[in-house]
Image 1 (cartoon, rainbow over the protein chains, first blue to last red):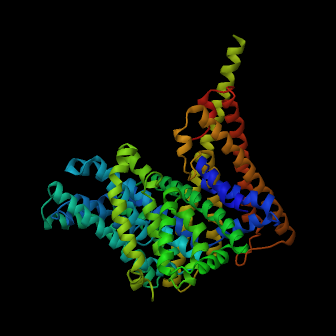
Image 2 (spheres, each protein chain N blue to C red; image 1 turned 60 degrees about the vertical axis):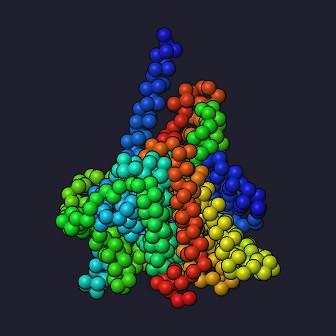
Image 3 (tube, rainbow over the protein chains, first blue to last red; image 1 turned 30 degrees about the vertical axis):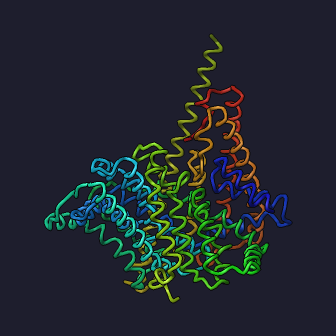
Length: 423
Length: 186
């Protein structure tokens, strides 16, 4: 079973085979040659994985994020954040981080945020004196905030895989997301002050009011989404649908920046992207099912208990494991395969599963821009045109900053649980 | 002269097949977009109805989930045709042309085997629930349809993999020029 469920997937993954096919091939090989199980188990579990109402949140939030980028909502938010941070040293860098956090509060798709911010802000950052490497590094790394700040697709999937409350996970992600943003902003202010990068703007109330008016519909979106969930008006899944509907109305009737044809095209692209994510969800479910029925989580728990590992040591090991995993595997796949295995062990050591979900998400968010395989690096590279080796140099300081944030989030559970639940 | 004309005719046939494929892909893509928008509207109507009219529309959850299954299956097939699924494709990206085609042949072979097995598993299951006559809980939709969609999806993926395998193998053996053998977006 180790050969078909561990060695084979690693080889196939390294060869560049699509992730869902890696899982499907591993399951097919296991069912055909290793385990005495009927093949129809595959259909039953794959369909069962998709036959889940909560998963509708994925296409909804992907669609909302896509509309936000195409309709100009994102551009208006960027201008608003720029106006707010004009007086701060390193204001353009801080605005990039702020805009990323705002976009995270609407869509929850990291790569989409990097692409949208990169197009608008990279030329300005490079011209303002941040340099090509650091500008591209900042853009690639700021996307990590989006995965942690609610609504987060990664947290929805963790909630489903680990059977945890998605609204609680969303709440738990707020403080850690702000901590990451705060530490990155502090670093950028320090860099700007040391390098003598001039402030881009003065404090201008007129401009703030003007940009606020332009961005009002975008600013209102997280209020509608999160207010709706926590006000008890709708579930996280319905909130995704409401967000997409809201973005459609704003794009078509308020900003009038998209035709119906363009909205359908955006929906089509979102549907295909969601299909790619959900095929991974469905096929990863079979691997998890096989491992669970074979008692693998229990074996890991027993092994760790025999090693007499403390919760702090376990979290350190998990951080190392997930940072490496995050470099080679996208958060969706990593969460779906690892959460069902790691959460029971964490629970047996007294770690709150909500806090553990935040730790997992932050780890995998860092992996999204850690060289050499982080997905956001490829997105930033294609948007900015900065060569890979230069981008790697630019991104390392932000990896260090976010690892510091990760350690704080890991060892101070109250930061996640103050809003996300009881300790 | 006759051989050249025949090659030209073959190339033209291939171009028209590719063109037809692209057009079909475009139609499927538009349908997927419209289905997603429909799901969004149903979702909002359901939430609004529950709070404004104190009446939820029966069976919408089921309908939306089955529509999502359709989106996932059709979208996954389309992404496979375009070679656009999520992958860590550093090896094919940095490999030289010949090695890249060899890697693609390997991928095609694994995809064909995995999706054919999945289609086989799916078929056994579909036959079983067809015999039992299982229906969905609220709308009473025969479960053969949503499960059958998955079966058809796996079959379509196996066919796509088979076609790519033939084309990539022909390219590797030098029977087709590299550009023709690529197939889809790479």
